[in-house]
Figure (cartoon, rainbow over the protein chains, first blue to last red):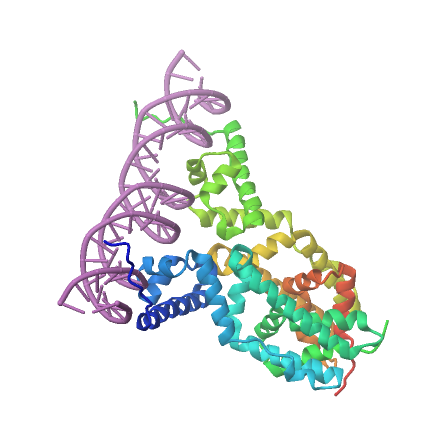
Length: 198
Length: 198
DNA sequence: CTTCAGGTGAACATTGATGTTCACTGAAAG
DNA sequence: CTTTCAGTGAACATCAATGTTCACCTGAAG
């Protein structure tokens, strides 16, 4: 009753608090993969993570906030390939193939999430930032690969081919055709190798 | 009151009846292009076509039926290219380029609908039949193009390249990169032309 | 041991869509 | 002139999701 407030610094509680949050984020991740972000409702998240719907609202103001946490957690579990994996290679073709192989392996591991993300991005604002970032990242990688080709005569077809090869949709299309990852890399590499001709 | 039923053959009425149906189908088409099939509700269709919701139910038992009518109407307005356009060409490369050019022009005209269709197909059963048919059609076209290359040494990379080139997603990716249709055709044609190499 | 506050479970009102029923109207058909 | 029926407008029950309120429980802090 007195204005005297007793300081309360939750220490032990903070742990279980964080566990609950994590359960919610992971349930969201699984739902995104299973039914897509667009179909993932707060109710479904609550049910899937075994907490009350209100508890979700306690941790996150709205769906967007959950999705952001989910995206950032997923990316920390599934970091895209880094340029260190290929930047040591001098030969432009070898560097290109190494980068493409790294991304294709990554897409193989993470296919489902990228599929639903590309399907739903237009309707889920929370995805648009991260997806744009990823696109920009791919663009940067392309630039690094193209730099190695510097003054090649047929840059006008090398450039779009490199960018096209790195796209998830390209990987997915080739996957649908039944090519394994080595076959895909060989194929897109082949697209580069054409000497000037009519 | 007598059991005597008067035959009623609606003639003039049939016209306006058909007009109403057409209004509904066209409103659905526009909504599919604007917000996607998945987000297109019966309520929205009714509002967009200026009729009562009940009138929609009068003409179609459920959403699936409207979508089917919509798909078939859209396809009659936007028929995919026919092989007659290129089958006369003997040279495999020329035939391939003609076919790809025809499809790319078609995709340019119909981009929006194909974009939303590919986004939503996994969640809208009514789309799955037509989309599978289209995929099969593309497959048939690919076969026709590949036949012209018959005994080429590097068939193992020609085949997936031809199939890949004809896909809507390939067109869309290259479009995003800013290539015009002629540039796209030149590029994918280039992907074919590589002689045997390492 | 008492107090405080984070977290829980259950309830509520609201929104928007579905699919169905009913009486009515207006125009074409007989 | 009378009958018939497509379309209207309003109503209703149902369902699933949203976001909010309330009383309670439990465990850490004092």
